[in-house]
Length: 123
Image (cartoon, rainbow, N blue to C red; front, side, top):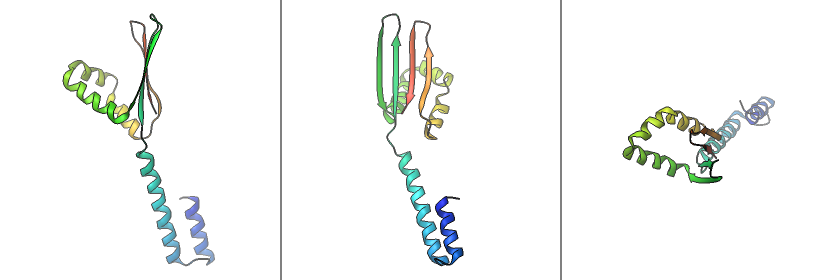
């Protein structure tokens, strides 16, 4: 129970407000909490893909809106059977689930056999 809800219940108990007024205040608090949760879910999120080639001493840093990234992966799956295997290998569905639950930060950090470092961040 939230601190505000406890204050309202104490006010009812002390007779500062009646039960009907307390109920209205509790409903208002509940509505505000739901709006905050909805607003945080609607926050624009992005994926940052960073690739570094140690041998050539160069790098690529791409930042995409998350929706564009997801659409690109779906399109890529249709044209590249190899991508489906890679997505299963890195557990793509689990990554999407953790992002939907609010995960942020580094999602992946891979060193390839040919000297590339690939890092994927969710912001």
